[in-house]
Image 1 (cartoon, one colour):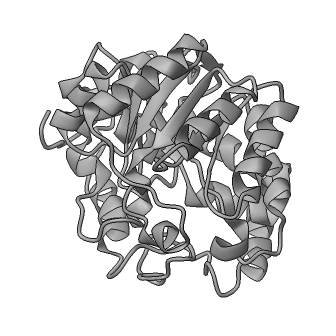
Image 2 (image 1 turned 30 degrees about the vertical axis):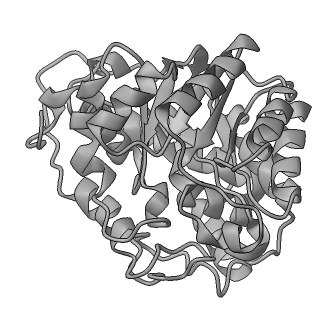
Length: 346
């Protein structure tokens, strides 16, 4: 297995000028660097994600029999080695330095995740090679991947969803939190928000083709209920990595109340500031069924290809297992508020 120090060093070299691959990825050194890997404007939303997770404390317990915890999970019908997925990120050329092709990046994410027993998500955007690479990669793996498309206006959304379904994927999603990307509108490829009735029709069409549907970018309980009412199988509680709205709360601040709003109705996934297995456990304890990780997987892919992605995934799995041991959780389903010293809203 690749050495993660070497992976980070290689990524820092390749991503020079686009990502500093900081020892602590907290958004402070890259505020306003969009395109790039930073957060929008002051970068406060990115920083809020990390700081909100950092503020949560875990209850350590050692008088129990959870010596060999089971990290496996069933997420949206997918049998995974752990409830952790690679988040959808695209645009290597303008976000990461362009020293790896989009196809090589997609393949590294998808292959590395599969080798680690989990699954990678893919992104969308402009130019077309972003989604073309994503769909080609998932097709090559006979559907082992979750494609996300942006909330395009006009016929482009339905056309992209149709192509995504053609990959053989069992689950797909729309990153609704990309609705404010004005850069795409300036390029003549507008995206925008959509009312609940339009989501109902979109989701009905996808589910009629046999796939499950995720709405990504839900940050309030009322919109979680709207997504569930529209027929979504899952939501991702996410502020798009702090890249679309400055001064939004960290995901860990809102996750518990959002999850409670749809508990038992749909699956709740979450992303934003997760860096290690202990962070994963925190999100699960706050009510998430699974966790998406973004920037660290990108660093792993640039620095080590598929082997780097697998190494990072295995690292997170080991950290999650250790955190489960020391919080007394035998299985993922046992992870709950009891593991947290203090969690607002639960």
